[in-house]
Length: 343
Image (cartoon, rainbow, N blue to C red):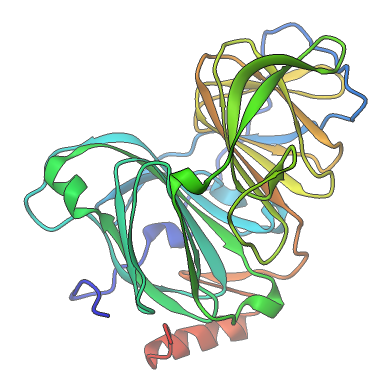
């Protein structure tokens, strides 16, 4: 297939980890302590990352580099990087659609979630798709792919509010050279589980206080549609009311990351001490305990909760390539220059 022509190949500015390390916060909220009542041990916060300054990726994505200086570290494994484009208004565009032109990837997967607006994808192995609100695009770069991402033609013509995110998930060493693959996951194929409030005696109440869209992994026995190469959890959760407490079971041997897309939360530890996480902030959780206790500090709070079994493998990352050694990175560059990607 023919991709959008460009005089130069535009590489994600986000691929180059140039964001300076941000100071971390360990802020305790003013709420009263909420002592744990469940028999399952609660996880506690290891570190809070504040919202990072935004930068442009191409001319279509104004993103927060959510993981900041923690990106591409084993501490987040198997997750590598996370860019979040907060809600932004775009005027109707009669010219070329905004976005990012042709660029390569090798050795990992990209997961794009559209919340508002539309993203049009095309790649060198023949996939072409429009990601609409609620949809997820799960692309396995594997041994090499070249793709592009633009605001869709329809969205460009009309303009409107745009919000999306993209996550990078590492591939295990044995799978890094797998054949490129594409999973278009439309909104209606993502199961939604009612979220019940936590009661004073440690049992779930009957009141539905929100919902969890299960993109990958499973939540309360409901499995997400995404196929993964290593155990991964990815949930899109909403809590409707301010002050609501919820308990979310999470595998105790997985890394766990909580991103506050909208609103504010307190993460409550086994000791009952709440740690406040604001909008676009991140809570990195300790790998101890089998449940996460969260209290919403604002109504209509929205979270992305993610994590997975650490790969415990070396990470060599440069630009659009993530491998295990620098020799493999050099080979990726050479293979790309020789036109071996996307086959």
